[in-house]
Length: 541
Image (cartoon, rainbow, N blue to C red; front, top):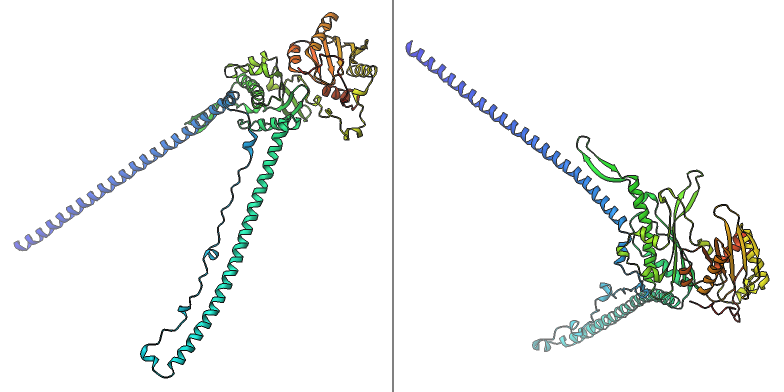
C-alpha cells in the first residue's frame, strides 16, 4: 500500500510540474504577445507621427511655394522696365526667314534590294564522267538536258530583267514624289523669303505701312508677364516722322490682392494676408508708367533706319462702366517725346514716375479708379486718308481738296471749323502764305479765354520759326492759347519748342479728322507737283 501510494503521489507531483510548466509557457506566450502588440502600437504611433510631420511639412512647403510665386510676380511687375534694357529690340528681318529642312531620300527596303541576275552554270547539269561518255545514249540525253537548262536560264533572265525594270520604274516614281515634296518646301520658303525681302525693301524705302508693321512686330516680340493684353494700334505721320500709339494697358486686377501666405496648423488651411490698397495703387501706377517708358524705348532702339523722330504714347484700359454696363476705354497715361530727348535718358537709373514727369507726360491721378487724362493726340486724328502723292485713282475721289481752295475759301473753312468746335472765331486779314490768322474766344468759364489761330497751307514740314512766331503773337495778344494748323506736319524741333507751352500743333491729318468730326466735311489733301510753299521756312527740319 505504501509503495502504491508513493506511485500516485509521484504521478500527481509530475502532473503539477507539467501544469506549472504549461502555465509558464502560457505566461511567456502572453508576455511575448503583449510585447508584440506594444511594438506594433509603437510602430503605428511612430508611423502616424511621421506621416503627420510629412503632411505638415508638405502643407508648409505649399505655403512657401505660394510666397515664392508671389515674390516672383511682384518682382516681375517692379522690373517691367529693367527687363527690356538688357535686350536688343532691333529685329533683323533676314533672321525671320525660315530655314527649310529637306527630307532625306530613302528607298523602301523592298526597292533598295538589288534584283540578282541568274547565272547559267546554276542551271546546267553536272558534266558527264569519262566512263559515262562511252555509254550509248548518254551523250544525247546530256545535250537535251543542256538545251532544257539554257531554256530555263533564258526564261529566268527575262523574268529578272522585267522585275528589275519594274523596280527601276518604282524607284523613279519615288524619286519624283520626293522631288515634288522638296519643290513644295523650297517654293514655300522662297515665297516667304521674297515676302521678307519685299518687307525689308519697303521699310528701307520709307514705306509708311512697312514702318507701322515693323513697329507692331517689335511690340509683339516684347515678353511681358501673364495678364498683359499687349495689343496696340499704330499710326504714322511720315511728314514729321511721328508715330502715334494707342496701347492697351493691363487692368487694376493685375496687381495681386494677397501680400503673403501662411499655413495654420490648428485649422489645417493656408491663409493669406491682404495687400494694402495704397500699396496696390502705387504698384499699379508704377506698372503703367514702366510700360510707357518701355514701349517708347523698344521702338526707338529698334528703329535703326531713323524712321521715328517723335513718339506719342496713349495708354488705355478697357473696362465696364458700372453705371451703364457698357464697355468703355479710358486713357490713363499720355506722352509725346522726341528721340534726342528720350535716348539721352539712362533708364536703368530712373524712377519711372519722376522720369515721365520730366518728359511732360500726363498720368492719371488715380489709375485704379480709372480717372482719365486727355491724350496728347487722339488716335483718330492721325487720319490715314492723308494723300501723299497724286495718282489716277485719286481723280475719282469726290472729296474737296484743301490745296485747291482759294486763300479766302481756306480762311472761311478754318474759321467755320473752330466755330463748330464751340469757339467764337473772328477772321482777320489773310497771311501772305495763303493761310489764315484769326482770333477766337473760348466762352467756357475758368478754362476759356482768348485763342490765337494761325494756319499754314504747306507741302513741306512746317519750320520751328512758325511756332516761335505763333508764341510771340500769343504773348503780344495776351491770349491764353495758340493753335497752329497746317496741311503738312511738324518736326521734332517744333514739338520741343511747344513743349510745356500753351500751344497746340495740328497737322494735316489732324485737320482732316476735325473737319469730319465737327463740320461733317470729308476732305483730302493732295499736293500738286508744281506747288511751292510761300514761306522759305517751310522746309523739313
